[in-house]
Image (cartoon, rainbow, N blue to C red):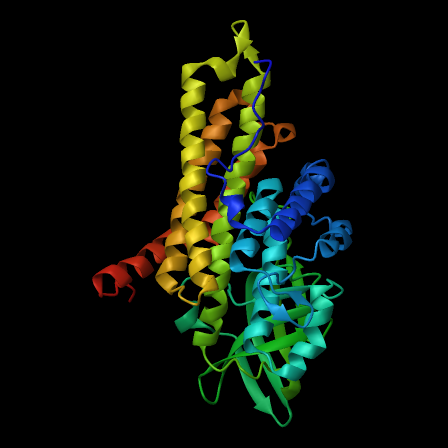
Length: 393
């Protein structure tokens, strides 16, 4: 065991698909997560608070809205953006989710649905992370069926819109500067998008408590009680739920990459543990059953990462369809759930101690498994594509 190989989970060297500049940027993200996040994240996870003092450091990485171009966004490839999500998730899934909400859902909505004036007004500051965004779609009684069941309403009143309703599970919602709110126009029944600048009269956000997963993500229950939004803050190119779906298609692939990152983080901690932990007079890494667990974990990670890489390539050439994103998200999260469980199993009882990190990944995997499309819904989206028959009623 003297000449130990480096601890890595990129078994097929998918990182080589990136050019030298992007690889250097990816390594900066990895270094930030290893040096700035890992030493402190357990404390914040336990406190159920996001370490907002990390935001300036995240901003310096220049990764907010990475796959979008213009208005301060770097215009990198979807493949790079996905691998960044993976690196963030490898370090801590809560930080990955924070960035996914801000740079993916909120900034992605503005890039895809805002007018030129709106993009100029908000996106540069969001790219610098001077303004933090949130995305309000899910409601207390509507998650998977929100396309048909959206209850938050928008009523036109002269040059303003009046928003009423509630949103639930809104990451960053209690401290965001801008919250994208999706609401149904009471007159036309169309789903429209609005940007609510906080604080605003009638807008309140209360963090959900006692979560067992992604505890460092502050998910809020948002109440909109007669919140007035000027017409100039209505997203001018968001005119139906189809526009919402365009945003979710892109971010669903990023969540799949984040799931790979969660798997990688658990695996790498477990591998280090196996090489250092001794039982029966030798490191447990030399035991056959331990090596079998490592093989299973690494196989899951490699298969999922290869699937995500191809999905990102399809996204870069404009060929990504809903079923592609759903396959990536559904498969990667299933394999993630297995992988983090095996990492915990390898570590025995020590795997449930937060100080060994793997327990955090095990818990966080439960949230990643469900948000941005449950496994069941993703399976039905793929099933519809391959059979031509929809099982969604």
